[in-house]
Image (spheres, rainbow, N blue to C red):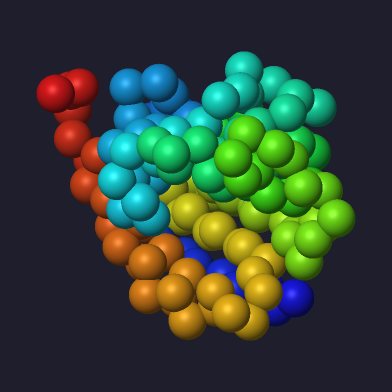
Length: 144
């Protein structure tokens, strides 16, 4: 497993960036850069289960390992979901996905993602697009 890291400076408060990352009005709007229509099923509470799914119901099963509002969110991936079945015995088990927000007159967002080699190049292309989308949404004043 390899960890890849991405950073972006955003001209918005940490509260606003947090809202864009995890709020119902925004999450799908930035996460869809990975696959149109992708979504998460969770209550966003520490210790809760998360299903990150495509419109076809394929994806990842995870848990929220750490949640410090406006500062830090860490997911631990437990495995994959395919055809409605969870597979917890695969190469994604134990992978970490971490979001850190730092106030600096705006917000510095750092995302660190564990990935298997097969997806490293894909993440290195798509995560910067997702970061730009988060920035764009956070710097806008209103929900469209």
